[in-house]
Length: 116
Image (tube, rainbow, N blue to C red; front, side, top):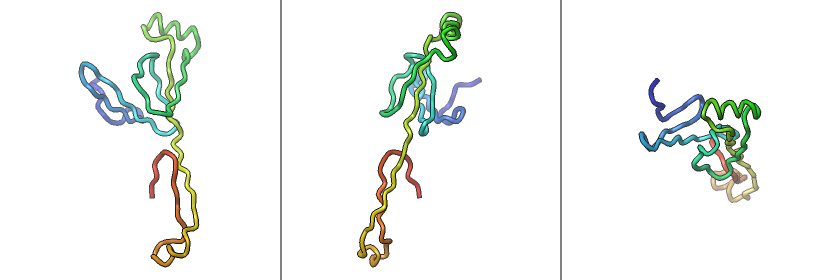
C-alpha cells in the first residue's frame, strides 16, 4: 500500500501537504459533509465548520479504543456548513428591455456554487 496522493479519497477531496516530516491532510468538504478525527488532531478549520465530540460507540468502546488501541477516548466530527445561495429577482425597468437584456435582474447572495 503506497502513500496517499492528492486527490479523491473515499469520495472526499484530500490533499497531503508538507511531506514527509510534517505531513498535513487538507480536506475540502462539500455542504453538510462530515469528517471524523481524533481529539486534538485538527489544526485549523474554516469559519462556519461545526464540531461535535463523542466517544463514538459509547464509553466502553471509547475506553477500549483508548487503552488497547492507543487512540484518543473522544472522536471529533467536523461538519461543513450548508452552502446556500439565495436568489432574488427584481424588476430592472424598461431600459433593460431596450438594451437587449431581460427586464428582470437576479441578485445572488450567500455562500456556495453559482452555475449557469
